Amino acid sequence: MAETIQEKEQQKKEYEKYVKEVTPTHNLGLQMAKAFVTGGIICCIGQFILNYAGNMGLDKQTAGSWCSLLLVLASVLLTGFNIYPKIVKWGGAGALVPITGFANGVAAPAIEYKTEGQVFGIGCKIFTIAGPVILYGIFASWLLGMVYWVGKMVGVF
Image (cartoon, rainbow, N blue to C red; front, side):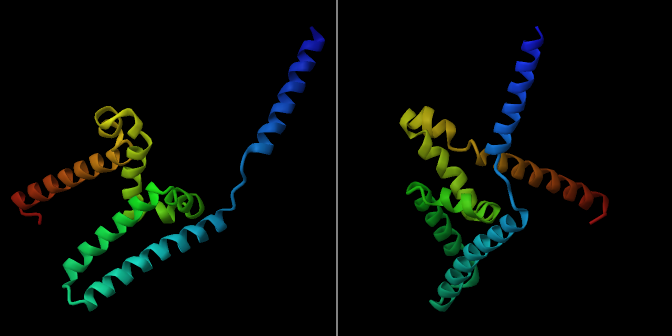
């Protein structure tokens, strides 16, 4: 019995040592710097598209639409070629927060589940990641709209 307890304690110590070895360590400052650089590069690309579209004679709103369209397209293409996940792994939130991250969140499940078919694969799984964002975004918009509407009715706004 005594050996069993000692063996269990030894196994527990070995397991704790193993967990410590395989658990990745994170440098918060480095992660923040990488996110800043990655997000900054994406934003600079977006600003370049805006400036280029403006120089081509497009108004601000149309240039913004083209910018969004091209960034989403680039994100989906890079996701399809398995490049965007590598950017996300390196840049963290800097690659996930902009519109490109949202496009990646929709494209990645579609690509992952395409083997299960159009309906049960892509159709059911495409909004697995982006669905909650859309749902709560719409709900928050509706709720704030109701608050504004009631505020207008009672004369607060």
